[in-house]
Length: 459
Image (cartoon, rainbow, N blue to C red; front, side, top):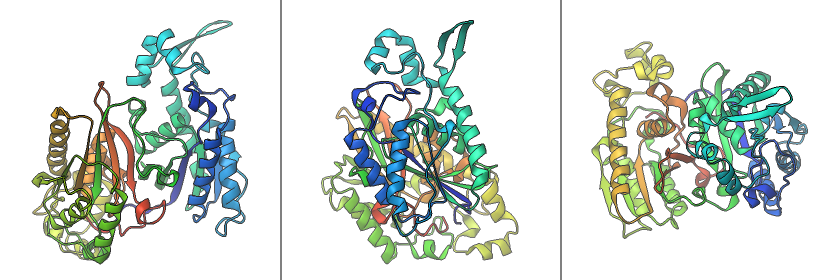
């Protein structure tokens, strides 16, 4: 089954590198920071990579580092054939960065010394960060991250109704972008750290029904246009990095036919996609590789490992695709005829559907997460660190893993798009305790462009 029908597409961009970014300073609401020469150059790179997309509007934070980034992008978009009548960027107050009034303009190294408890909360439990701000009438207590999520909700509620069936561009900051992404997916402030945002990275959200339902994350934190195929790990972190790849296209993907555990091989497009993924990851120093044993991921993994002959491929049966049971081999109209109403239930409440003679989503979740946990723990136990691994699987399996890492439940199964040949990047900090980080999801730039234009066929 294809992913949800898309009504409003939102492309999110973080501003280019600023002087305070380069100096390691806290920016927040401070507007003294300006774009560096690198920041200006990467803003123009964003414009170049987006100029084939038609936009209805551009919105920007009022802070100059974001506003200048938006203006550089606009100049390139407005000169393109696809956007000759694009309006000037509009300032939206709720796109301003998180306010950290007690820290702003300080170096993070200073914050670590002057407010060690606050810094530890910021690093590990940011939703618990509290600031006691002296005022003329007493003390104002701020919870910056919690308040940022309320700001993000207001932003969505005001902007989305203005743009049904449209594509809009938002240019803002790391913190507010994380909150916008989190609130769109149904994540609370306790998950603030998980969704990463690099300078001038691109993320794509699709809203099928405005603010009434959770969005679908088409892609997160794309950096290929900046010369970085994969986002860099956080500065100073020792990490276990896992590259989660969906197999290339099959004829049944193209036809929209449910394949599940029927062993359908890659078609000619899928083999080309596997070669494109292989080239994309050619220079990545892989340490190990794991795959579902089914033909389509196996062929994809073997193509990738052609450039990494020192890496052996291990198979895990629990990474097999969901068993659709009696649906397998069927097109959607055929499923609807035999099982009236079940396709709509699968779209609306996937966690409640039991596939006839097949699996339910909880069963898939249990085995996929058991396999993923085994992969993570085995890699962490290896004394040779840091490590970088490849995991090649399927649409449903990858969606489940991404939901698990993000802190979502089976009810949010449709929140992550997974294109054929897409790459997602997940980092596990090794030197200190902390959550897994979604560095990037559903990278398909190696297949042609920012937007995912793969078959998106049945699972």
